[in-house]
Length: 77
Image (cartoon, rainbow, N blue to C red; front, side, top):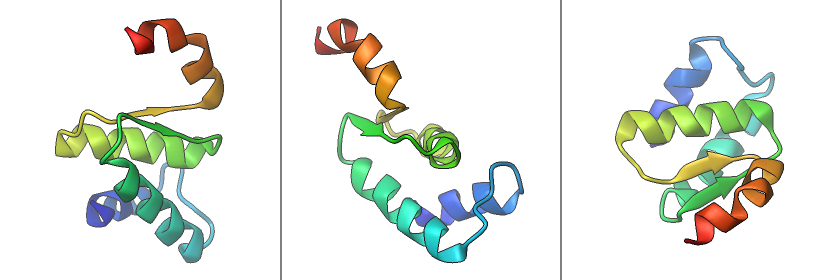
């Protein structure tokens, strides 16, 4: 999981400026892979989480808080 996240970051699009941030974010994305949703306000992390879940075939949805709240009725069904 973290390897895929790192590879997406190293491609240069929405890369983190600090390596320690990337490690922390990759661990959060990894933990959330066991959940239905991963909610973050961090645009870079949101993009890389969604790509990681897609590439690895996880059903976890990466969402921003407003996206989650705006779709709450649909998500609860």
